[in-house]
Length: 403
Image 1 (cartoon, helix red, strand yellow):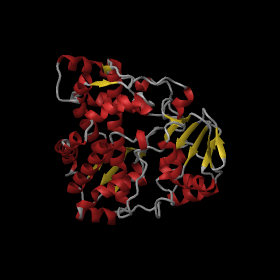
Image 2: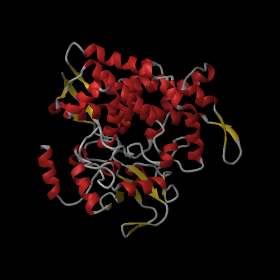
Image 3: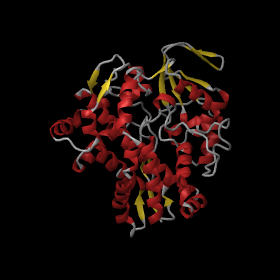
Image 4: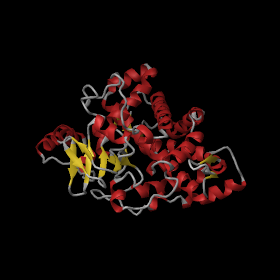
């Protein structure tokens, strides 16, 4: 179905957003635009969750950690299942644990350390792209999106290169869903057990990597106790960092390639004026966010648009809708690298904003630079492109391109 036909179809369809519906997943914006204007507090009775879609409402939810808590998870399926959150999975923790664990990661995940990766990121891009220059065609995901971020986060953590692909496959398997269905909510994807041998090795052979840093770190809890991370907490953190380090930038690279192929005039301008690349990456992040929503649990009754959301409910902040709210962004459905800068919500907001956003931005910027260095012009073969079937991120599994 063409994009125009889909928009017409969605304009006549009953109002409703199903995060697992493949039609909505392929292009969520026509329906989300309707919901944002017609029912800004949306309730899905099939899956029993509420959703806010306006920018200011999403900011309110993400910024109020007393009313909207993270300690029960951030994915609808898992929150409904009521699973337990392992210690160390700070993105799904509330204070004081969140404060302690996030603070520890901030001490090792520094902007200086991210900036020092520039040469390595370019080297990994070159390794991925140079072999396909002569062919004039490549798969953006297979050749670049799934390769460079994997090697960068692997280098940061200190995971041997020979083991990276197996680790990446585990991440993909944990996130993959059957089309049209929720993902399994067992929580088994939180386990860091496959990384145990690296922790045990670094205990005896410390090095200059994040695993060694996590082992060595000492901190004072809010209760005044001086302690180190437990082995289990370290494993959970490694699992989280490797998964997030793969997924976000992989999706960003895919969307950058697709959107710029659809806007060749802006791509040519970026190629001629490379100083535009950072703002182009920000516009891609706004226009096609890597994750459709961020979930929270409602800790106490709260009102939105005259309706009370009861305590115990699940609330989804639909950032893909908020990023196209006309109250915040002029002509929001238009891709425009020159738009007046307004903060998008792709990396969240407030206390739980994505800790790795600086790394993702650096990787996205360098990936675009290196693509332009080799392929100033490209087209995407959408007839053979394939969206990955996942519930928590949105992006491409296959994205063949040619020059």
